[in-house]
Picture (tube, one colour):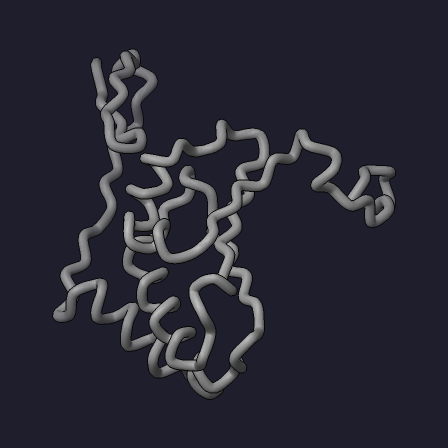
Length: 151
């Protein structure tokens, strides 16, 4: 039997013996009443249990935003513009914001991939840094965990 599995923006076909297939599971679809972008905006602008982001920052501070690598599903393109606008309302200049992405051993994303994931406007507004774990000059040794693995 041939099965197509979603992989990024593509489908990958695999063949499997029907005797070895217990079943095919599909996620249960959820249809909210509000668009995802509105839910994200409301959550950022109305945090639970604390004040708004714009009230936590001060002008002239530098801001680091850490985002997951492109292998992780995350609505970066929806979240980042709202975050940046909220920071701006708190007096933070775009030039004082850097977005960091750690890619581990994955292939670093290309500029077009970053623009697709973050939105071209976000990439134009702020600095984006992709961490390179193979560049020792960017690493700081913090010691070792109990089994001798460096941190």
